[in-house]
Length: 79
Image (cartoon, rainbow, N blue to C red; front, side, top):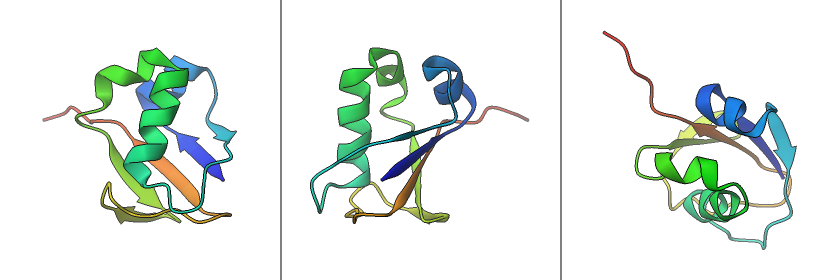
């Protein structure tokens, strides 16, 4: 599975994407939780991160499948 990172997440990990092997049926939120365990700098955005699966916005409980692309969308500030 490819996990795409943007803005603060990309800066925190120093890359725009990574590959992860997750059990079939892992949710988007579960994938983020696992990634945040491996990279604690992401944990602060756990309450506000949004998800896209295969380039479509998706709720946190979306089950992931092998080959999916998960995008982690950090909070955006602006006016």
